[in-house]
Image 1 (cartoon, rainbow, N blue to C red):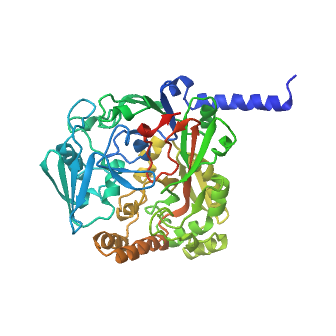
Image 2 (cartoon, rainbow, N blue to C red):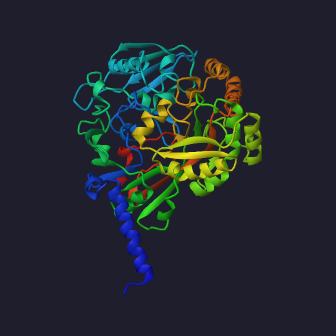
Image 3 (cartoon, rainbow, N blue to C red):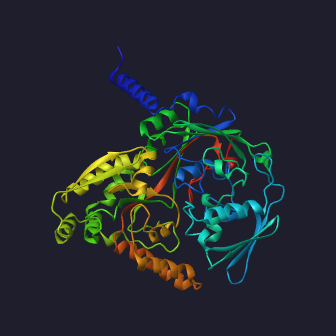
Length: 502
């Protein structure tokens, strides 16, 4: 007769197995990478494979550095190094950058890479109607693109940009094949060490080593499969069953279970993410700053970080991360104070209970954090109805402005320019903030730029644009023997060509 402990173990195994099957990730699908490959789990399936036109950060996790490359590369420590460029130089006034391109680079179909591909890609990104999320920050500032010869690109800027090399290393600035750019969303053709092979919708995307890659001998992983499992139990089941080699997630608590497992190593690192309760300014009474401040006062950030993230995060009070140079800690602007929240709601004339809908994407931090936020808001008279949606539904709904509250982690570094766009999904419209950003971008004085950077942080905090909660740490679980795995993520990318097995 089995003991109670044995029975419990069997029950847990059964539940994990059922969770794995429920997630639609059969072991066969997760084993596509083969004996000389690697299988990486990311929580959210991308809705496109074109990072220059679609906003989801999961796109870059699959294709950036692997299939598609840019002029520059961002290393794990945040430093920028040349990639498709072999060198660069800057004019004294900071308004022109000259890039010398690598020779002998080819796209996966054999077509040569040259300056015309860079010019095409950047003009496409800045064209009217472009949906490139870096358009305001980067491409609108490019006044002219000169290509004096096939291996030289000169970017002439409207104003100096101290962050341009970093921006050129992000996924939004990858160089596309001019002849096949239109098909990038479903079948990208790039210059990277891997070529696109297959997309099994709802399960995985497979990339295979590109034999024509310029440094093919240095690429030691022959194939990579990205699997899409967002349920924590299913993620754990896939790792424990050996179907996943690298389990990458952010703002999650379920990596701790692997810290005592000798088969895996657990890496806890930093990121530039900003986890927040986003508020729709187009919906009353969320257009009232007193209501937004009340909501912020009502949320116990430290409890959220402790209970939802197992302490792996830092409380924040504006749309900036502690990893940003010049960061100002503003979480104390609205300390946890339910009584102050109730006073602000009365001052705003809000009739209680106030009923709002909280839309939750399928990420673990959202599904686990939603009830915590709802419980905090209930204490001040705000009754929250939680609505669970899949990632594609969130992109088509909340990200298009059809929501009241949503719990989301913005992972892009230094993306404060989203607050200059009144059409962005939460609808913030502030001419004074836009003025601060314009002055910051146009200043050539380092001290003034730092002062304006602080003012931008304080302005967003004073307006309580959103209820910022946490800057998450990254939890990565890697099978022992897999080397080259990042611990810190200045951008969300998986550089598979840098991985190898012992």
